Amino acid sequence: MKTYEEKIRETISDVIEFTWSYSIWWELGNKENFQRYSKVREAYPNFFRAMIGSFQQGLCVITHRLFDEGKNKKIQSLPKLISHLKSSNPSLARQLQVLVNAERENIEGIVSVRHGVYAHRDKSQSPEKIYFTAKITPRKIKSLVYLSQQIVVALAESAHVEKKELLIDNFRHCEKDVQDETLLILQSVATQL
Image 1 (cartoon, rainbow, N blue to C red):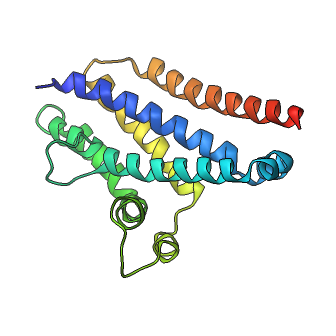
Image 2 (image 1 turned 90 degrees about the horizontal axis):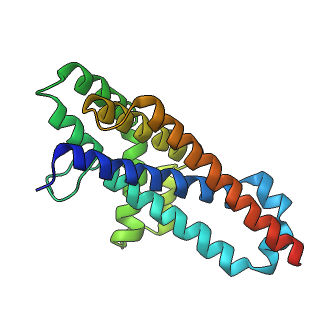
């Protein structure tokens, strides 16, 4: 059985993956880059549709994994790590739970897409209808990325797994580095056309 500290370390890795996935998805699909690299997208339309779609699907899956509050004990999630904290630091546990609750509608919308489109195709609604109902926006996903970072930083610091400043710096570098790498790839492909 994993220790609480090991679970936090694994969750840090999950949050880094969430950060990378969001950042790549954003760089591939944001309006500015969409226009700037339109020739690249036109030359490889299927590749970009598949990449953006895959990252979008991954973002829905990892949102479910990070924020799951279900009874499945095998799923390690932020709310379950917060719950574990109730006995040793109830004040911090309450603070973190308030943050999660403030994003509940956003989390449920993204998870509904995961359930109804990607994990179990909902026969009563089209994928488009599910997306429309969920009202997913890049800003909403970004807020969950930052929320997951904020929570795991607090958990890691509380459990003496990692220092707050180092972890925050690590998340910022992960985000910036993968953004830069994605743009370098787009620029490299653009020069080949």
